[in-house]
Image (spheres, rainbow, N blue to C red):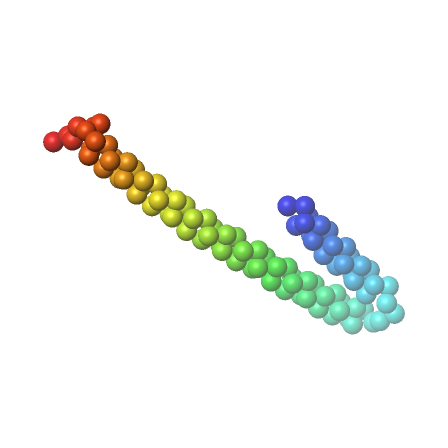
Length: 97
């Protein structure tokens, strides 16, 4: 989580710096507004892309977790069957009818 906060801080700082740079530039008001809007759109696209990558990573990790959980479940199920079969063969457990 610390790297996420760091990234957000860096993006916010860069955005603030860009806006201040544009505001203090000697351009006409309409040109300044156009530049601010363009920078805002650029940053929004960048954030959208980072968020999409983050969601993709979370989904991939979730799929890996589910695969591992299913594999562990199947292994445990097989061991229970094996142990129960040995117990029945050895007469340690009576079969229920």
